[in-house]
Amino acid sequence: PSEPINVVVTGAAGQIAYSLLYQLAAGSVFGPNQPINLRLLDIPVMMTVLDGVIMELEDLALPLLREITPTTDPNVAFKNVAAAFLVGSMPRKEGMERKDLLAANAEIFKVQGKALDQHARKDVKVLVVGNPANTNAWICSHHAPSIPKENFTAMTRLDQNRAQAALAARLNVSVDKVKNVIIWGNHSSTQYPDAAHATVNVQGSTKPVPSVVNDDNWLNITFVEKIQKRGAAVISARKMSSAMSAAKAAGDHMRDWWIGTKPGEWVSMGVLSDGSYGIPRDIVFSFPVAIENGQYKIVQELQINDFARSKLSNTSKELEEERTEANNVLQN
Ligand code: NAX
Image (cartoon, rainbow, N blue to C red; front, side):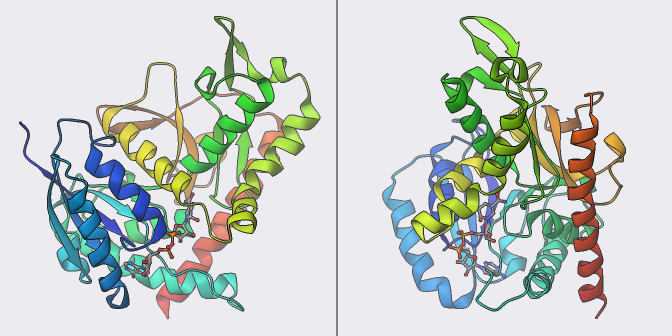
């Protein structure tokens, strides 16, 4: 039996964590043979709620779940963690500008970056879910100089899962038949959901999605907008943001990073740009990646046409602007 690993979830009393914690305890992320100790970070007013979540975790009666540590102190939460789910962040309140949101979160992710730097394992895998996820991941990594920059990632897997499901529905196949759809860029409305390289398995043979859909207008406009606006559609119907699907996507992201992707398949993750596809360096940009032995590699040499190029530069521009804003607030 392997030794337990320490896993931290921030925003542990919130709605995404509520669905995520079950997956962690059940072994669907780190595998059925990996025991875990959970470190649950939230803010002081949420500690009573967190007590209730812990009671439920105990009542799951799941054997992989060992110690559970609730805390408001990042220095406790990040001690020797092997994996970090940074879900907690300041939600956008009425009348709040995007800038104010970024400023409030820059401070949170600076503090957590420093705590990771001081306390986490140097090979810790960090997944940022809290928005603005890409820029929060960037801020966090910049405050954790002793941890490799590639260990900081941002979640665009929910967008990928949404895109895969939308294509499967359009093609009237089950979701597992659709592969290699890509989310490029920011987890925001400028993201580019790209089906140009996706494949669909129809009656045992693998075909390119664009030729089977055979409707460029749908793929370039309807599909792209549907994915970009899906989060807003869920909020308007549910009066709360996506939580079950976001938690499942966070589990998918970390599981694939931990265990690897299948040969010939890739997934999308916000990772530090190394200049691939002409994207500016030093922003956390969602790329297609293939993963082996816990290391991801950006998938290279996909053809990028002019349409895709304009979408990529639009979303990378937004990320550069967010970086500038983050730098401004962090210097003050
Ligand atoms: P909730 O408001 O239900 O929960 C957030 C929790 O974080 C709260 O319990 C809060 O007290 C806690 N928190 C706030 N500041 C904290 C701090 N400094 N340290 C520790 N905990 C802190 O939000 P929820 O619906 O769970 O969403 C969490 C975040 O995920 C939001 O920022 C949301 O925008 C983001 N999302 C990101 C997605 C993605 O695809 N990357 C999709 C889903 C979601 O919208």
